[in-house]
Amino acid sequence: MATFELYRRSTIGMCLTETLDEMVQSGTLSPELAIQVLVQFDKSMTEALETQVKSKVTIKGHLHTYRFCDNVWTFILQDALFKNEETQENVGRVKIVACDSKLLTQ
Image 1 (tube, rainbow, N blue to C red):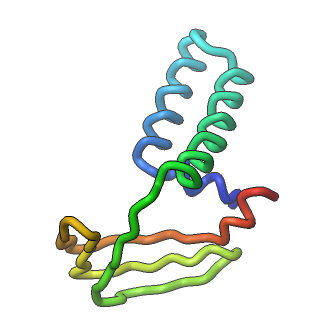
Image 2 (image 1 turned 180 degrees about the horizontal axis):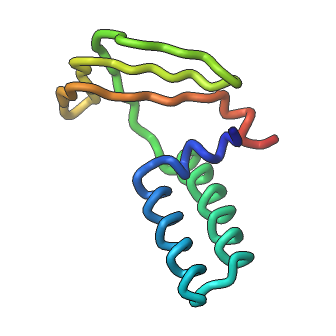
């Protein structure tokens, strides 16, 4: 799995991929241009996370499952509490996928 696929599996990434697929199938967009859009999406997500995210969040919860495969950590938490300087939010179940940011530049 390419590291950038983590972004593509997000809600916005899946919607973008579905839309591009529909446009390619209808002949509105060439497959080559659709691939270029996805590559630009990957770069934009990486840049946005590096430059625009400034806040820190504390997460507490019951660790239900964890895995480490192909340099990617996956954590599934139940009854998680997300807390930052201003607010806190309870979430019943959350899946966190994390990888080494150095892998993004390879």
